[in-house]
Amino acid sequence: MSEQHAEARGATGSPRKEPDLDAAPMTPGNAARVAAAGLFFHACGLLAAALLASYGLAAMIAQAVIAEWGVSRLGVRWTAEGAAPSTPSPMARGARGVALGAGAAALTTAALLATGAGHFERGGLVPTTLAVGALSAGATAVWHELYYRGLVLRVTEKIKQPYFRLLAAGLAEAAAAAAMPGATTLEVVVAGLFGALMAALWLQDRGAVLACAAHAGWLFTTRSVLRGGVFELAGTPTLLGGNGAGPFAGLAAAGVLAASLVALLVARARQPS
Image (cartoon, rainbow, N blue to C red; front, top):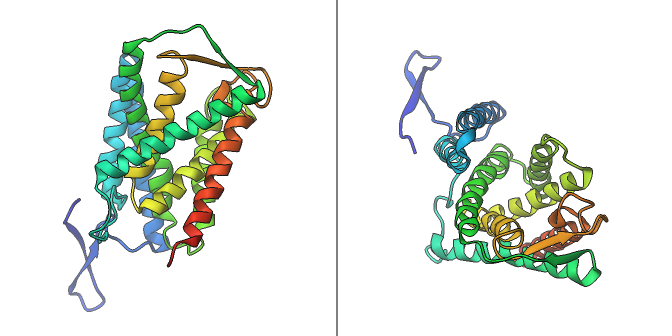
């Protein structure tokens, strides 16, 4: 994080220092500045991805690097400052996050199979798919989480009611999904629920580690493990099975994500303040 400060002249003519955006209080003016800077870094990431489009994985990694470099200067933290000494290590939180994401994918798979909305087709172990999938899942998770959750939660940090902040993060993810060519309404709904759930993990963890790891675990399991790397899970052309958009873009996934969000909020509400 930068330690420099911008100087301005006060009413008496003496220098008055204002903190950089990474430490600035979230006044309406600073919120607008953080949002504008975040959009600028986001645009830089998209430009880098376009320039590196033919390199695939390199484009994803470039977006993640730009996102981390950019939003870290806007007050988005991997771990909250002043965290209690009893806070688990980043590695432990990351492992828990991966387990949560993979677990949500497993529950969705179970729901698809139990309802007949999904079935396994012939597949096989493809090590390269798993290796590349792990890297792309991590890079995509970092990029999405830092912008669509970290930045949104940073801008809205003065809002006392957390449900409005979760709604804002969910809408940001839904908007990103809606901007994709050919996105269905159901895909947008699932993306919105996923965004709200990840935002709840941010608030629970007071940082990016848990949510980024959970996002990566979900992506790796739903894309690499269950969609070509080990198994080939197909969804039926029904609302439960994704209606042609994929087994993890249907009502089965929406139900698991919504139930997970409610469970997390209930657990958070029961914690001593």
